[in-house]
Length: 162
Image (tube, rainbow, N blue to C red):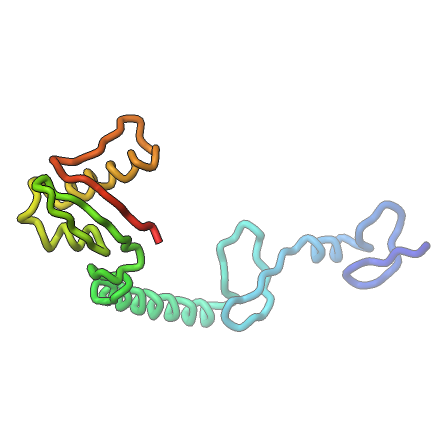
């Protein structure tokens, strides 16, 4: 049974991984692939280095700044997008049926938008009203120890989580 050196291909002696110290040091080296040019370069496993040269590093930094620019443009557009802005079409909007203290029933698709548009109907802030109605919902679902069925006279009649 003949075992050869994984680096140079020469015969190995007994209980050896490589044929020489030179091959052993080459075997222990760790190589990474450059994210820009895909060339292999030597770097320790604990190193955060991603590129093989200063030129590739400069290209990588330029790519990062263009990504940051595109992210800032996306963040600027979030409030006006129908799925992420303050609209009834918001991606997390749900159907709500609530009853006022006077007995009037209101149906809405986006609770926070409805509360924002109808601040004159309830006392307190938008956050207090939204939290109060959400606590009623969680109580009905059995998720609260201290149950509540109304918030300042407002009752939750139905909701749809779809």
